[in-house]
Image 1: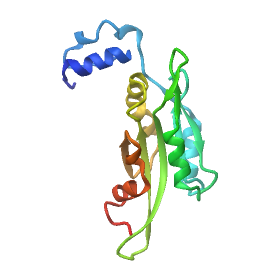
Image 2: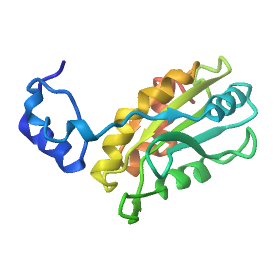
Image 3: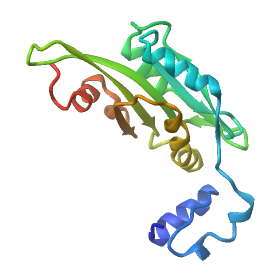
Length: 186
């Protein structure tokens, strides 16, 4: 159990989420009615297996509009899709709130990064999980995505690197390659 201060507890209450904290009474007023348990659509795993077989370059996952299931939003057409197109899809992702309002939305993504080693010893591939949660997304959507991420990751065997990105600079190709390759990319 993790204890944390009232500011995050207030944030959770504003978002309408339930977390067990060091002092459970902080959030007990809303606990009985709220669940953020999500299912993962079986197609998520089947499509991930295609990526692992080098048939796809990326997969973007999202939560369904009712926030009950993780589903596939889009995939590359093949193994050679352009990174800029992938990045644009993440940056422009939108989520619908319970009231029907549409705004910036978090996403999960898996990208198969290929890079050449600076040492000249060939090239490498790293399957990378990206948790995209833009700063200007709604608090509730960010909380639900953060709390359901592990459900998806448990179904995706073979992820080499995990990244959390909250701003556009963090998903620039050069920045990610530096992280994924641990500085070894050419």
